[in-house]
Image (cartoon, rainbow, N blue to C red; front, side, top):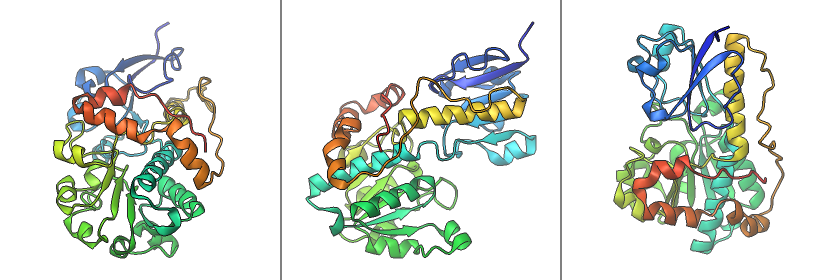
Length: 335
């Protein structure tokens, strides 16, 4: 008997092989190469940010669901999907601890390079969702003075968060954890960079377009970037000047990837009434969150995420951005 569903999935999304076999033909393709011919007759797509999901891709398709194994959705034309009745599911929060680990590694690296301790620094956090809230909790436990900006949450919850300009003026380090939309594109621009204290460090693991690379270069501020405008085609001068430079892998933990895949499977199961409730890849041990002190973090973080090695690797071979990213060895979440 033939299978009733067709699913097209990015081949770089792990743990999906065989999951849908009893009910669907699953076509695995490189995310950048998924095109209209691939989605012809497809019922569902499972994608990453490399697949642009809009009218050009979906116009003649019968797709009913797009499950993105990412927290962001700026690669999906939500308005078009609403008009077409296409459901969109994200993996919100899946990589929060992976990004926390990346930020922790960057902070430990900068502390060594710039010779400071957390209690001597103010950390500004822009965007206090799944990731930003975790960064806030751990950074406060390490001794940082933490200032937060999240206008939508502040309007809803009245948490005492500060305006962006005030956070910028008072921060020695500022880290961005916002989605990308019209309100956050080039949120960190020449004007905002001009408000930062001299020598303040900019950290971005959100989306490349949240920070203006051109303005960042002109500002003279140190910076650590996991995401880039126009990636995978990097500005050579911007890359050369980075304190930390990685290939959009901040959230690439084993548990984060497993959770993203599990949420995508769950979305497909719910949409098409498949008996896969609670599915989680057996090959990935679940995350075991715990507290970790600053001293232990500084002793151990390089074994999980050596940002100096990753930076040297990218600077040697910027043309290999996609290959490095696609072949990245997922980190274990150990806190």
